[in-house]
Length: 176
Image (cartoon, rainbow, N blue to C red):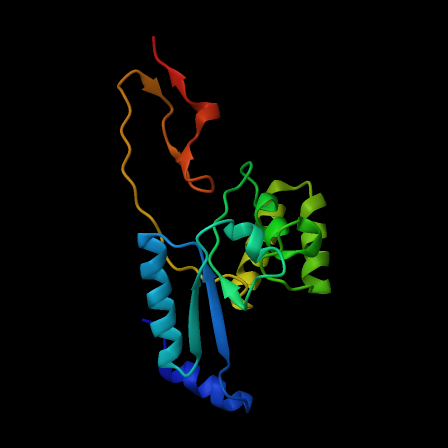
């Protein structure tokens, strides 16, 4: 449920009024509901939110000059390592930079995690970077999807790989 009173107090303590913002998103039944929740939640604490559904070429618009203050996006890891998520989404050299931030300390930490060869240490570094991105509100999670999938009894090593949101195809096999 969040903490609307704390949010109002933080806005008040900033000495500035909550701004008017436009939320870009690609419309769908789920995205429309999420947009309405985002609008209602932020307006409850003083923001003025305009919804901007972009029906065609969404990513072309939001990664070009047509983007507004914030929007909806999705991402899937290319392989099981946070480098394929954190660096592309939150750094200028990553290509997408959904945060539109250019934080030198964050960039240096991403560079350090990218070359760390101790997997356990690297994992902790990526977790810290992900947490920092969330604390900076570069990403606002709006939903978590639950799914059920079935396979035949002759398919082995079946699991859903969380970062990709699909089967772990490289590890599956057909049983004799």
